[in-house]
Length: 244
Image (cartoon, rainbow, N blue to C red):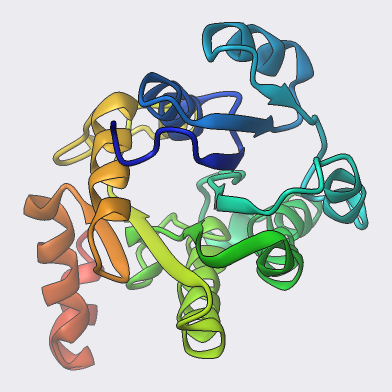
């Protein structure tokens, strides 16, 4: 029996990228899945590949949408809730479209706040709440706004949830580096140490089986960014001015 066999797992953001790859990986281990995202057609196709997983389509950026989705769940408590949902529009601060920035904040940050507020109530004791931050939230880089700012906030939010909910809820923070997806296709620069969504999903499952709070990968990249964050600003800002 595998680690996730028979577990009830809700993947929010499952229609593409890491969320889609995670759903397939969990299904291969025999998990019972609930799949959510905005694209209901993509979710239905994925559900067929995942042993008839339950589909609940909704937009995390819409107020009240998560609360409504929870009413459509079966009453049994879940073993894990994983939220990978995010929007990404790389741009410099001077070029930000305020409407796009607002939508990113609604999905990436306010949506995650709702997950952190509502989902612990539907998890069994010891269940896992897994939120996706990002290495982009470690330190400010040119062209990363407003995505990077929201991910920095999610990193902080998840730390707070771990302090508030442990040990009843097993809170985990996932900070990926560059992963091939429809989001990173928007980048016009060389992305160091980029990996596939399937490889990323493997790192997440391995991390969930372990005990570390933060699941970050690939370490050949994430450890370098962590080191940059630890430098004094007199050094780190000198380096980040050269990036992008």
